[in-house]
Structures are given as structure tokens and as C-alpha cells.
Image 1 (cartoon, one colour):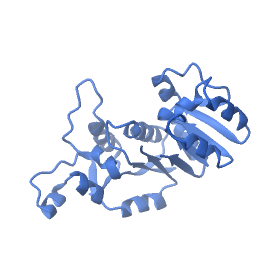
Image 2 (cartoon, rainbow over the protein chains, first blue to last red):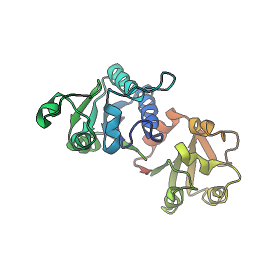
Image 3 (tube, helix red, strand yellow):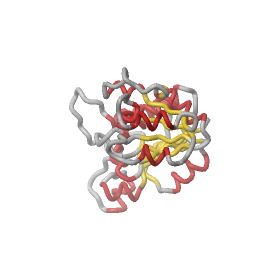
Image 4 (cartoon, each protein chain N blue to C red):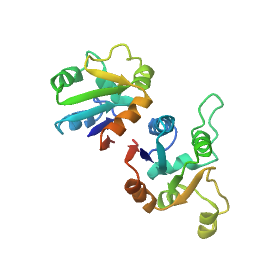
Length: 130
Length: 97
């Protein structure tokens, strides 16, 4: 079965990002396909590579990046939500005249159409948020 | 429909709202698992809704909150794999955020 996951909450906030990650891992472990993980609203904060959590804490951002690398996941960050919160890739840096990028490995910035498409193409779309 | 509830019933009305939809399955996750604790105000509601709803609670979140050993009869515990199975089993799912 084809799953997509929507993450609406940032890391280290309540629990949604953790639950979404554990759920995504379980979907893959069950042999299902993950069509896309879409990060929206404060969920885009899961995509900054500049986080430095304490060494004895989980690294939520790196964990997503690693999972994406291992399973070739399509992890999409909403562009409008990213612009508001300062999540920047090369293209956004040039377009908006910024002096740095911070998008973590495995993520890409795109539009809400990617969420709509995920809803259409997937058998299930599961929402995690606050 | 599978209703996914991540808020404590003592904090937000999500659990009661889901019950008002009449029938289906309710999966309690995160702080939502407090609804599955024996002796609380939700015990009578869960008893009364048996037959209309199936109730599930996420084991890891019950354990994190120290209530895994006092789950109400009529609530089935599931792990993340069971969570995935429930989403697959029901054609639609609603996260009450």
C-alpha cells in the first residue's frame, strides 16, 4: 500500500515529529511504500541542518535525513512555510537575496501542489501535528 | 473511519468529539493515551461505546507515561506496526489535531 505522511509540527515541540518518524519507519518495515513525507507549517523546522541538540538527545533532523537516504524517501518542505521560517536552499538563497542556506540533506523545497499530489497518488495520507 | 487522537481528554475535546461521530475505531497516541487509563472519567465513556467503537492505544506512549499496566478493559494496545495496520485496515483516517 502507498502511504504519504504530513508533518505539521516542528522538532522538540510536543511529540508529532517523533511519532511521524516512528510511524514512517514502521510503514517501511511493514513493506509498504512511502510516496512522500510533506513538511508544512512549523513542520518545516524539521529540515534545518543547523540544529545542535545535546549529545544524549535524539537528533530529529539527522534522523529524518538518514531515513531518507536509506529508503530514498521524497521529503518535501512547503516553500511558503519555509520562507516565513528561514528554511533556505540554494535556489531560495539566490531568489530572496540571502547569505546562507540551511536545508538538511534529503529534503527539497517545493509547493503545496506536492501535498495535493501526495493525497491523490497515495492510498493513505496520515497527518501528524499539534 | 479511524480516528487518531493525540490530545489528553482532560486537555482538549478531541476524544469526546470523535465519540460523537457515532462509530468506527479510535486510536489513542501521545497524550491521547490518558483516555485509556483505568479509573479516569473516560472509563465509563469507553464502556458505553463498546460495540460502536473499537478502541486502541499505542503501547510506547502508554509506557512513556507509566500507565501501560492500567489500561481499561476494551482497549487494545498496539505498537507502531499495529498503528500502520490500523491505518491500512480503515479506508479513511482522521487526526484530531
